[in-house]
Every structure is written in structure tokens, then in C-alpha cells.
Length: 315
Image 1 (cartoon, rainbow, N blue to C red):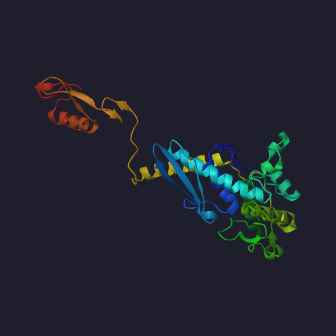
Image 2: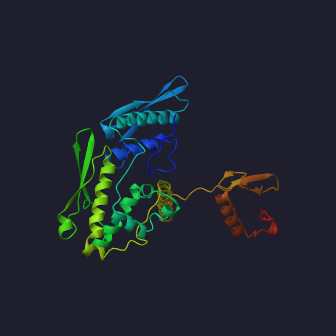
Image 3: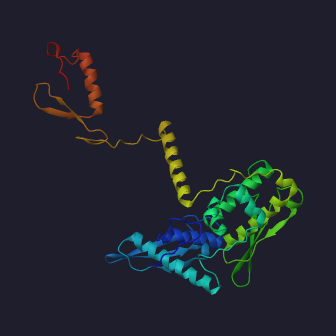
């Protein structure tokens, strides 16, 4: 299978399930749920074959090749789905890797102020720097400063309309803004990718806000845009889950994690031995038994010294 990557999805090489999810997200302009792309795998002798169903794209299906494991079979099905979508895009004159957005000068200057592409000085192209997450983060930062609050759900409203040739046009309204900006509508360039059409009208809206004299006085993007790569996002989500579990354990909502120490009794701190009352061999006991033995010794007055034969001596 060839190596397929998409813009703004570093580290996804050869993981075709992730590439397929990213491609579907770009095509539909929506985040993917667990039911948007599903896999059904069947066993044929010692091998597996999987079929990918794209519910987010009118239920399109793609069958993968036979593979030695079920996971490899799913990757093969995802690869075939990507290849099929790639063929459809090529028929429209587009490619998976191509994403050329027109970056307005005001947005370029704002991104420089925010420090979003210091790598430009090292030869990095602005198209590489202005990723999906970078554009979204910059838009959120601009609106938060103009409104002096974070945007509420539904305030940034995109609408899509289809045009001939399988292309989509996105429009954006920001009714929460005051004056003329609140009454305007921005229209993006037609694209087979709804996400690209969405980003295009977002860039046009940012240009209008940044060049508006009233809004410009409120905007200072230096240090205001926090951009993370997809791998950094996953790491942050993983850390958040770990902290949530730790808090649940501290509140008694979850049992504490088992230790990983190894002893004679296995994981979690093995068992210790104690001599039998007649001084014979050793009997193994765990932590709870050790506590009980200590209490018994105190009650019996052994104190670890074997006083008057009542104690069992040190253990």
C-alpha cells in the first residue's frame, strides 16, 4: 500500500483508519463520531477480511484485502476507501494533498503577531503554517477579544449549499457582532471539501474583523493563539483522562490502582512469611494477615521478644 498523508495530520503515515477519518472530516466539514465510519470483519480460514462503511458519506462501502490479523484487515479496508475517494476527487480535478487557501494580508499579519508561523523564516510555507486548527484557534481568539468573552455554542454558524460538479459553498454569519459586521454574510470558494469551504469563508470573516477600525483597537493576538498538533492534542486528552481517574480514586469513586511490585506472592507486593507456632516451617501470609498478626502479638504481649513463650518471635 502506498503512503498517504493529509494536511494537518502529522504522524498518521500508514495509519489508514486515521487518514480515512481525517478525509471524511474534511469532506463533510464535521467531526467524526464512532458511527460515522465503521468496520465489519469476517474470518476466512486463517485470514481476515474487513469492510468499511462510511455512514457520513451516504453509506459508501469498501472491502479490504485478506490479512493475517483483524486489525490489519481494517487498515486494508480503510486504505481501499481512501483510494476510492481519491479517485472521485481526481475526477473533479482535485487531490487529497492539495489545499490552497487564499490567506488575506490582514490575517497573515495577525498570524505573525500571534507567533503562529515563526517557521516561515526557516522556509516554511504559509499554507503549511495555517492549518485547520491554526485558523480555528485564531478565529476564536479574535472573537473572544472583540466580544470580551468566549463564543457560545451556535454563535459561529456555517451553512452549506451544493453547486454543480459535486462542489460545496459555505456561508458564515456572526450575528453576535455589533454594527455592520453582525449583519454581514461571508461566502467561501466552492470546493469538494466542506471543511476547506468553511475555512475559506472563516479567513474572509477574519479579514473583515481585523480591518474594522472599532474591532482592531480591541485585538492583540500576541500569545493569544494556542496551537497544538494532533499528537499534542492526543497527549493532552490522555493526561486529562489520567487526572480524572486519579481524582475519582481520591474521592473514593474508583478503587485504587494495583501496585506493580513483584514479590513471592505475585504482583502488588508479595506475601511475607511467619514461623509456625511450633517453630517449624514457614506459613505465607499477605498484608492483611500481617496486620492481624501484629495486633495479636500486642494483645498477647509478645512484643517480638517471645516473652514467656507467648510470642512467636520476630517475623
